[in-house]
Each structure stands twice: as C-alpha cells, then as structure tokens.
Amino acid sequence: MRCPYCGAPMILRSADGIYRDNSNHNSLYVCRNYPECDTYVRTQPGTARPLGTPANRELRALRIQAHRCFDAIHQNGYMTKRDAYVWLAALLQAPQSQAHIGYLSEYSCRKVINESTRMLHLCEQRAANRASEEAIS
Image (cartoon, rainbow, N blue to C red; front, top):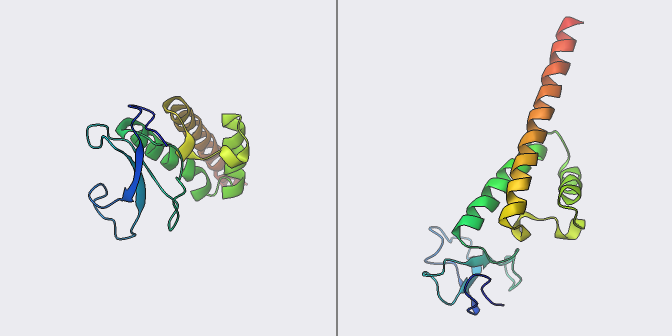
C-alpha cells in the first residue's frame, strides 16, 4: 500500500504515539513520512486489514463528521441501522459492501454530511407534525 498523498510506502505499526489512548491496542498503516505526511488508516482489530483508505488530517476530520451525522439517523430511531446503510449506498450510488465512511473522499463526505443533516431535519419535522396531530385529536 502506498500513501495517496506523497507516494511513500504505508507501514503497519501500533497506534501508540499517534492515538492519545491506545488501550485497545489498535494498529495503523502509517505513511513512512509521518509526521510530515500525516496520513494513516486504522486496521480491523486483530488483523492487518485496513478499515477504509488512508486519510490525511482533513479527510479524517470530515469522515468523523460524516459518521456523526449519518449515525444520528439510526441512533435517533428514524431508520434501522441496516436501512440507514441501504440509504447510504443509494446516496453514494455504490454497492452496500462499499458504502462505508472509511472509504469516502472529501467530496463524498460533504455529500453525506449535507444529505444526512437534511434527512434528520425532515425526520424531526415529521415527528413534530405527528406529535402535534396527536395532541389535537
């Protein structure tokens, strides 16, 4: 695996020194030029399989924000988690197997943030309207 930003090899190593708290003993693929090139991707616990694609600081921040917005849809009960991932796959026009925040580009993260926020507002409006109708009847 090569760094998508500088082209250097990615090295599998402990997340110690990168994560403030690595009590879960996470591993990362880290750009050989770290910290000058601040690019890495976490692995599936106990494996060497990356959980997405390598990302720099900006893309990691966008992915965190996209995940928070997306997760709110199913965490607030507006969809099941499964239905939310079906919705995400349709939004991204991708197979469900590839509809994961860890694979998203900056553009796609912004799209997920915007559409998830729009969906949340729509669901909140519908819930408020139902509550209002129930109060009247």
